[in-house]
Structure formats: structure tokens, C-alpha cells
Length: 547
Image (cartoon, rainbow, N blue to C red; front, side, top):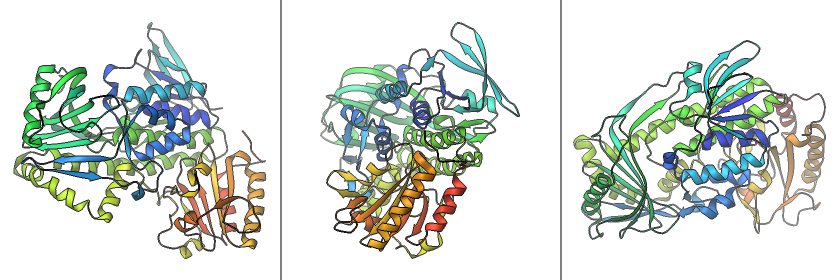
């Protein structure tokens, strides 16, 4: 089995380690810090797509028990006006139709416990200080807290070690970008004011913006104030008096009658300069980068940690199957082609949002003055609301141009609204407390065979399912889905036809869904031979495989 070293035990690294382990490959996971840093709680937003991944990992209930689900946002104007933006769950085809907030240290605790259950130990106080990429294998040089150096032979090096990534530096991967002329004042506080405790509040002012994210617990908020920089880039110190003074300066100007805020408890405060940077390649030889090691940006939109977790989920299953020798090594190249494009869009979109919220000059001032009212009006139109919801929730990400996205010839007969190869598989209700996501859950590909009401098609798909199971074992889980009252009574029942409708499966359809929930093959009910060809190309099998 391959030697895989994961560097960094934040949310990205922990997700990477857990994903590898549940697919049958045990990595080594190291973390430079001996204890988690106090400001690790910087990221707090969990988008719908991340909650779906946590569902697949089996930890979503634990996460939501600790988190606060946020249904809407208040947008204030400088004249004291106020509007509410509500994201409707039905806009994104997900059981988790709204975002949640949870301090990052709690997210890391839950992921860390999952990693431990998977049998992986976080080795704290171990730093990567050297890396040599050889022809047959690579060598990582590790330095332990006691000063001892260790040389480890590796097949793959995964950099999940943040903005100052040692993996990125040692692998020679550039990190182009720039620093904004603004700074971010960040506070995790308990405070009393008249802004709601269960809604996001967005307060643009003349020289910046204030964002107040509610957190679990009474009067608990994450306050983000983006303002023109007054401190040196390396200065992270922030006194409570300065933080409170800025807070009191900003809030009355936008919230009208809102009482002057009073801080009851300050858990931690910090300031930092904002950057927008992205790597040109997510892979160089044996080295890969993910999360903040690959892209950093403004906090606008609550995207950063979620994107890192999805980077890990994308690479983890691919690397595990390559390490097990059941898929070709070329599959690893799709990590860059799929996720680099996502990173580029992320940087551009967060830059636009940041410029709108905190941009300088007359244009920035005009945007902050008039954009809130315009945004509230625009989001009243469902088409606008849906696009924003799918973008922010990250359920709209797709990989249609990937080498792992195959459209059979018959796919052209499926209706336009049906998902394409490369799209996220929509989560639709099959019956009472039973959804498509229940079929996809687990470390395997899922073959969805929609048979409709046709007895002949259900019989043919049932035989195909037996064939796939005999050949591919635990790698592919075939599921025949039929409409209610269809015969023979085999497979899963789509009680009200919602799944058949959403997947355009009339009279039938074939979808192969990857372990990360994206569609890898799409075809009509007649495309069984193209499916077989795709499976033969995707997997390297001498005999049926079982883990």
C-alpha cells in the first residue's frame, strides 16, 4: 500500500485523512502545532454542500446538534433602512437547505474524533522541513518537537497546511496574488444589542462593512469588521477597547434605533490583512495542495473552509483508489482540472463581493449606499435567488468538462432539466424519510438504474445490477429504482415519482455517481453497453474486488 503523508490537521487535513481511511488507505497525519491555535475558530460557516459531505461521513447529526442553523440575513442601509433576505431550502435540492454556524475548533473536534475512529492518529508537534521528489518514491524530512529529524519514504505528499504551506513552498508551487489595502478586525464575543441572535446581519457603512454572524449560545456572535488598514501587515494585536470603539462607531450609523452594543465577554480578538491568492497548479509530481494552501481570499460569502473540505473530499477518494490499484493513476490529474477551476471562480467571486462590501473611493461608497436595497429587490425574483443560493451553498459546483464525466449517446434524449455528467447528484425524496442521498452514502460508486413502470426494463436492470456486483464488488453499489406499483417488486421505490422526474428518467435512465456525490456517467435506459465500457475504463480489475 502507498505511503501517504497528510500535512496539517485543520478541517481540510482531517477531512482528507478520514476520506482516505474510509476508502481503505491509512495515511500518516502530522501537525506542526502541539495544540490547536487559539484563533483556529476563524472559520465558522458550514454551507449546505459541506453538511451533505458530513452526512456521508456520518457526523452531520453531531455537527448540527452543536451548530446554529441560520435561515435569513438582515441587510441594513446607512439611512437606517433594513431588509431581510431569506434563502428557500427548495432552491438547492438538498436536505440541508440553509447554512449553519459553528466555531472552527468545534468542527475540528468532531472531525478529529472521526479520524480517531477511523484509526488515524494526529501526530502533533511534527513539522515538514524537507521534501525530495524522486523517480520511484519521494522523501519527506520531518522535525519532531524534541528536535529529532526523521526521513520518511513517501508516495504522495498532501499539503493541507494553510496559507503558509510548507508543502507548497518545498514543492516549488507558486502562490501569486495580492494583499488588499484593508484589514479585518475579528472578534468572537458575547454581546448585548438589539440585532437578532439567529440571523446574519450585514451592515455597510461609508468606510467599510460590519458582518455579525450568530453562533450557538446566548448572545454569541462572530463579528467581522472590514476597514481601511491602520496597522502593519504583521500586527495581529487588537485591544478590546479599539474593537468596541469601532463596533459602536459602525452600528448606530446603519441600524438606527439599535441600542449601543455592550460586550459581555470577549473570547478572542484579532486583526489580519486580507489577501487574494491562488496556486497555478494543485499538483506538482507527488505533491498536492488543498484548502488555504491552494487558495486564500476575503471572508465574503463564507466559502473558504467549505472549499478546502471539498478539495479534500475530491482528492481523497481518487487517491485511495489509486493507492489500492483499482483505478488508473491518471485519475489524479482530474483533481487539478476539477478543483483549480472552482478555486479560480472562488477568488474572482469573493473579490467582487469584497469590492462591493468594502471597496474604496466614490464607487465603493455608492455601492455600499445603494446595493443593499437593490440586492433585496433582486433576490425577490426566484431565478436570482436560486442562482445565489446554489453558488453560496456550493451545491451548484459542477465538473462537466472533467475526464471523469461521460455522456452516453442516448443522454441527449433526456430532458433538459435532468442533471448532466459532472453535476452534483440531486438529493430528492423517494418516500417518507427516505432520499436519494441515503442510496449514495458510503465509500463507493453508486449506479442508479431508473426503471420506471416497465417490467421488462426493471428485469433487465436487475440483471445488470447482479452483473455489476459480481464484477466490481464493493467498488460499485447498483440500485434499481422503480415507480410505485411497478412490477416486479424489486429495488427501491420512488413513491411519488419525484426522483424519476428530477433525473429525467422517463421511461428510464442510468446514472453512475462517484463517491463524492458527482455524476460520472449519464445515459438513457438503452445505454448499457456504454456504461459497461465506462466501468471497464474507470477500474483496473483482474478479478472481482472486495475490501
